[in-house]
Image (cartoon, rainbow, N blue to C red):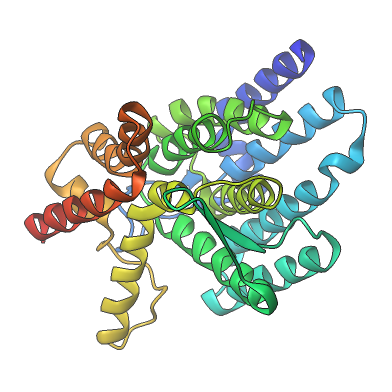
Length: 320
């Protein structure tokens, strides 16, 4: 494991400190536009770094490749889709199409990549989807993929969210230790927080897509083998989910593409009133306070989720 950390650190520093060289050579540069807030070309190397570090950890630490074969293929497919999107700016229709195709292929080959049921901790009951399990699985995949990509717009937000989410899902929801995937992704994200904050590297669509694929596979797989409260999972992604639904409804009402980029996202609105760090802290508190309070005072999370949603809409109302 030590060798993995040393090699990974070297690779991350090599790419990050030569960010403009790699960004230019790979044609992965994010150019400023009217619907973006950065002012100069910035390399989109976050997804590349996360993927390389994952490969390094798998090569040096894992002997039974079959255990991680399907999740690796799934993440690599999303990374490839994201890289292509970063280079040629794919339309939302193509991204949704390929995400669906990747997911269907994995569903047909991996039984654990299906949402057969959901568990309600407050009633201690499971609800099985039966013949609807495949469409429900695809719907959840698309919603999380879209929500995470839409939440990536300001420095460090999706990165810090993912760090907290990885730890929360493993220790507070699944009650399990970190596996090789978790450790490698966490390690790369910790470095990316700094370089992203310094405007040296953006996650890009490749980075956001890799993270989305990771959480999609992780949550579906955990749900297949364990009983995890559906409301705990929902609570983590509630804010980005509500913001996604709000934006889609507004854009459809205005007869615009529901997935068209703009500056009306919750995090952009927060950034107009608060500093970057304050914006991230507010977003993280709204996302993780329900599960934190639920575990701290031993009260069902179902009582805290509506409070978080109400606070979101209250703040939103004050911002617009």
